[in-house]
Length: 166
Image (cartoon, rainbow, N blue to C red; front, side, top):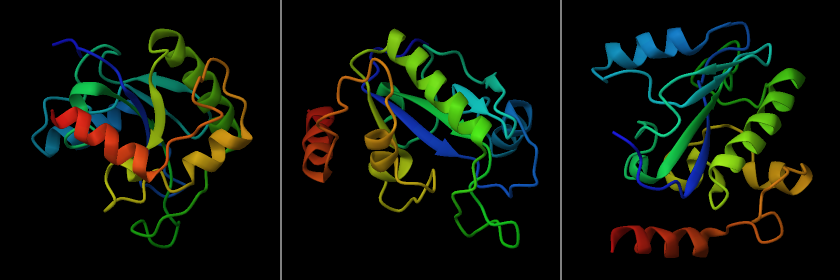
């Protein structure tokens, strides 16, 4: 089923150790084991920067409760301490950062009105993707991102959530 609109591009992490070289097939298997239809994310960025397709880009994905109907999910592999996978860590590689920027720019060509957010910005119980997305966007020139100068704050998110509910 096609997603009717794309308001958000949501950055996630796999919450895996830096030594775990996993990809879309592994995440697909994990999500199916949880009873899902298939992988929840649209794209997965591996540790080496390789971008793998998950769910179809325009499909309704499964990655943020309450927002799947209007958002695209992008997952960076990593985000957890080597010693304890339950503890968050910003441990993404230079190749992943490069691929993230390129992938965001490609997605913005398809979804020019989408706002880029971290999972934690839509679900305060989360820390994913385990880095400050707002700070990343302020420091990275993501071509085509029209919200660059007025990045979303908490009040904006609350307002958008109220609009989504109406």
